[in-house]
Length: 208
Image 1 (cartoon, helix red, strand yellow):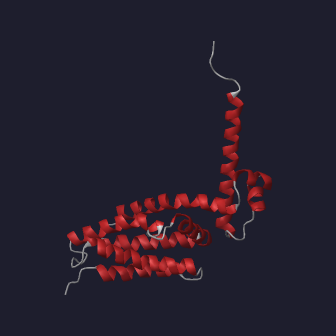
Image 2 (cartoon, one colour):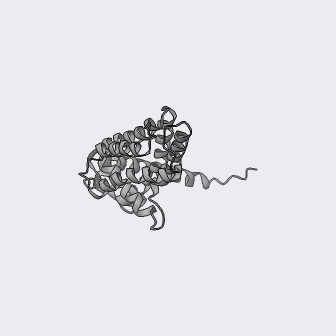
Image 3 (tube, rainbow, N blue to C red):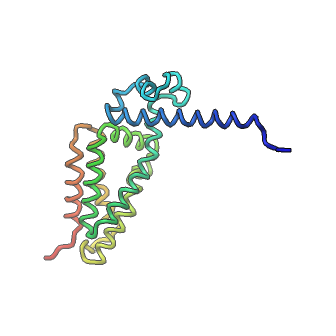
């Protein structure tokens, strides 16, 4: 005699269906946010793109801000992957720092409006007054490792410890990001790599 409960089967199917619809709504929202901007996208458009009724959207999400908030969870993992890829395929400290900023700037250029909204939401929901901005947590240790290695091989100045230099470099990069978050017209695509080059000039070892 089987101990299985037949009534559990349709419940599982309903749950899978619910998850499928939720994923479809999320993907439709993400696509529309990228294509036309967060502010210009309506719940009705998201529902239509997902082949659902607007009421179905509200069965899964309180509002479109809720979808945006969910998207912030992917920012940290994406940033970590970007760091690993950038640092793995470059050798010098300069190439790593400037390359990281350039790659980030290119990502922003491709998804300008939604990238800014996601970053603002990340700061709003995860930032704490006593802590540094959440996205900075992910880059601080890798950058410190680059500068420490650079000190060992003579690329980076050694009159200050690597942790201090890292705070200065990350602070310069964050200044560009902060300006962009405050003003969407700020040319972050040009200014972030520029800030990285300026930061590198400040920390590089001097030959004279």
